[in-house]
Amino acid sequence: MPSRPHKLIPPTFSRTPSLDAETVELAVAIELPEGVEAIGLAVAPVVDEDADDVPSALGLDRAALKRAGFTGEVGQTLVIPAQDAPTYIAVGVGAPEKRTAAVLRDVSAAFARAAGAFASIGLDVSRSFDVDPASAGQVITEGALLARYRYTELKREAKHTPLAALHLVAGAEDIAATASGAHRGEVLARSANLARDLANTPPSHLTASDLGDVALAVGATHGLAVEVFDKDALIALGTGGLLGVNAGSVEEPRMIQLRYTPKDDSGAPIEATGHLALVGKGIMYDSGGISLKPSDPMHASMKMDMAGAGAVLAAMTALQELGCTSSVTAFLMCTDNMPSGSATMLGDVLTFRNGTTVEVKNTDAEGRLVLADALCLAAEEEPDAIVDIATLTGAALMALGTKTAAVHGNEQGIVDQALASSKATDEPLWQLPLERSYRKQLDSDVADISNMGGRFAGSTIAALFLADFVGDIPWAHLDIAGTMLVDADESWRPKGATGYGTRLLIDLAENFTAAR
Image (cartoon, rainbow, N blue to C red; front, side):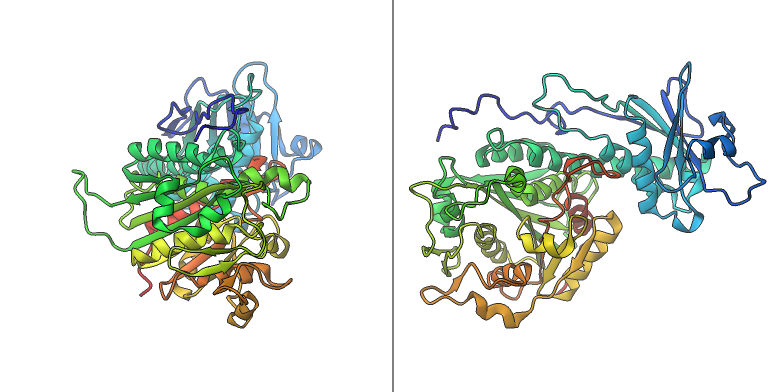
């Protein structure tokens, strides 16, 4: 089906590694080379008023820093102008008891942001942290590359300086491990930035079919088998939920299936340590359908209602390079949700992949409808566990705010693995109950189940709906409605789409163990 007439500019993803991405030179050495334009040096809060432990290269003593309002607390920065390069930047590292790997990531991000006018930057802070060299290299690289991300695809003149080179200082005995960690951090940041690109792209530039094209392109580069299902194929599959949500749109829906199979160095498949299925909600734009959303700022952000699918697609691109030993199958359910004369109406009944009939009581509760079909398909694969990720409910946002996503599940083992990956990546999760006694709120007079319950516990009600479609397979559901974007720059999260869940899913796949 042709694209809408106003789609004048084709989608571009210059940050996508396989599509002419900007590359950042990464280097680790015992000292910084000539030509580095900005150098970050660690400064801790004062412990002994008589001791001046400020790096001499800054050219300022503790008293001068104090007069400038710099105390050395975590993430504080002070740019010290220089007549000639390099420019030095004091970076607060906080008290010793605060110096975790997550804090080191934040410190790196604060420096990279303060050095935003410079293309070649160097950082000498890791030796202030009691963090192993590989982890230090990883989180420093993540922090810098994530913080310097900007979505500029549709700007004629980008008003930012792309990062061209990142130099890290390490002890001679730590260079190899730090460099290895830096490479891992680069892969993780690249994947998260791809998810950000996808979520930040306007819906007229990224339709469901466009996302299918992106998946085919990145899949070919990153060792993934990709299959894109068009509308006719989806009808044949019986995905009534996805088709019902798509009914009001002029754009065709797509289901994107990606498969990762672990291989040895020769490219031959090896026995997987487990089989994980991932499911992502890909609502390319959510108007609410017939249950139209109010016209407020949140409506404008509904181009990001595909952030779950974006996170899954981006996570899949990292698995081969990081040597993941689990096999991973992913299902992305993609459509927009629009009102029109052909749109699904309140009271309509849809029939899903597994034969379940669902009464639609609210067309703005569409995410669970598209996910249910994917969960049916994932369950047919008989994986060891299923994890879905979706910008699903405002209730999760109201309960947990913008920093923490909700997780529900039917088996504690897979939930615990998700929580462990959350901690490892500093992408916060909080477990909410799957309170089975609320399930009766989803009863329907005319169908097997309805898509809406009562006024309260909306995130749990949505999770209970999804639980009906996974059977007894261990399953966890990540509701990321609150964490999909930030309204202003904070640490390694620039304003706009966060890419939340991408690094979490990568870590989960790498460390996945069968829960049954």
